[in-house]
Every structure is written in structure tokens, then in C-alpha cells.
Amino acid sequence: MNINRDTVEILVCKTWENIKNRFLNEEILLSSERSLCFNFAWEMAILLNCNRNFIADFEWNIFKELDSDDTFLDLRLYTDSDFQIAFEFKLPKKGERSKSNHNQTRAKIYRDLDRLYWLVRNDKYNVQYAYFICITNERHYINYQTGKDEKFQTSHETYIKQDLLLRNNNNTSGEKAIKRDLRLPEFIFWWEKIQRQDEVWYWLCPYPIIKQG
Image 1 (cartoon, rainbow, N blue to C red):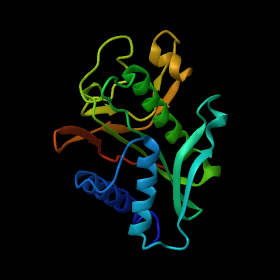
Image 2: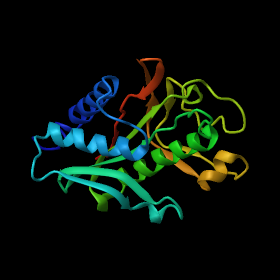
Image 3: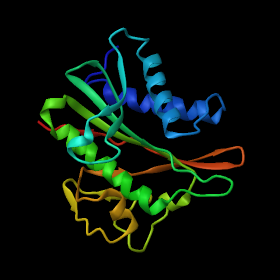
């Protein structure tokens, strides 16, 4: 099997489902975004029967045209360089003594969406599909948030209209974390709640950002 327009959405959804099932069965550890990213590439390789043409490229330094910091794409996958998929991952979670900075992280999630949308609009990179992949055990990302960073909303059923422009006034902690205006793709935050022993986790359903034309 190859990655192409006919198979991409099936492969991504099946990969995500396999990771979720293995996590529930405690067959894999997801201790960080890097482990999530690696497991995603590994599961995709298995679905493709270890196709010799399969390329998994981590930390592609492609966003230096947009930002001065954190300029690496987490992952790109392809079996044909003319049809590439780009991925950004987030795994914000609470520990025993701390939680993630959800205001800044929600803003960075929106920056990830902006970056992925920029990639699929840019013809020279051959990125045809892009996905934002996320797991969290914090309800800050699932429940509606109010306050100064309310515009960076990731709550369940939040819908983003294509080409929505978010202006950055550099006033809030979220705005200061991303430092620029954002242009967003059509996107919906649809979270699935799962229980693993006494832990509650929320898995974001994959929503494709697709190159037009």
C-alpha cells in the first residue's frame, strides 16, 4: 500500500485508532510528544507493511520562514515525494505536582494550525494533507475557556472557519508565546473521552487540512 489521495484519510484514522487501543491496553508509553510522534510513524509503517518507499522525516526545519523559534515540523510521511503528509503533535498533561500552561499551549496549538495551513498552501513543499494530533488529560483544553486568551479556544465542538485571521496585539500570555498574526484553516475540535484504569484522557479526532486545487 502507498500513501495517496485515496488512502491517506483511512491510514491516518486507522493509525490513530491503533495507537489508542495499544495505549488502553498498556502496550505503549506516551510520556511525551516525541514518543507520541514516534509511535504514530511506527504504526503507519506497520499499516504500510514496511513499504521500502515509506519515508518518516522528523524535525523538518521548515518554519524558519514564519517564526524565529521552534521552527521544526514534528513529522512528515510519504511514499511518494509528490504526496506528503505533515503532522504537528501536542501532549499537554498534568503531573503529580503541576499542570501545563494551558493559555500559552492553546495559543501554540493555534500556531500549529496556522503553520500546517501555510504548508498545504505552499506549492513548493508538496504537502497535500496536514493533521494536528493531540492527547491531553487536562480539562482546560476540553472545557470552554474565558479570559484574555479566550480566542484560542480548543473546547469540544469548537469550529474554526477557513481563513479566519487572528490578530496579535502582544498583550496576553498566549499572544506573547506566538508573537504574530495567525491565518487558520477550517478545523473542528472534537474530543473523545477514554478511561484507562483511574485516568481520564481526551483524544482529538483527526481532522484533515487539505491542499485545494
